[in-house]
Image (tube, rainbow, N blue to C red; front, side, top):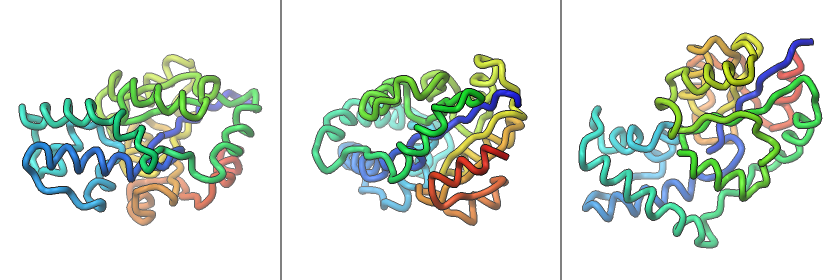
Length: 220
């Protein structure tokens, strides 16, 4: 059988970072004299590149100087907030076991495609010992924001694996739309921050409720 490329989103798919992201976002808004956003609002932008996400929460289309300043502040306080005991980014239950099975397969290459910047992905890799897990990765430091297909297409180019033999796994509509526009398959996950009906409506080939179910679908 041909090689398969399996690309994972991080936030809301592999790691439960919603409370951390929301806290950093809320402190950033307050610092800039704005009201704390609702958690629902923060959840809806997880997966987008940070400056795009902040602009969207404020309700503006373009990234201006204020949004750029807020983006810098968010990045400055992210590590300190993350080191507070209540804001760790644990792996979702069942993720470690599922990844171990995938890593043992010789016909699968695993990668990460994330709205985090390179530093953010590195901290996740460090925290969960993903050093050997991700053979390829693309972040907000490398590519335009999801749902642009660049992250997927660049991972395909780097590994020499066709988008048709690629599956993207994520919890946000941005992951699904990115996968589809790259010509890849898309598996939505129900345990993250996105809405299951939205994932289906945006073109997910399947939506799974437990990490081990991902293995069955990659098999097909």
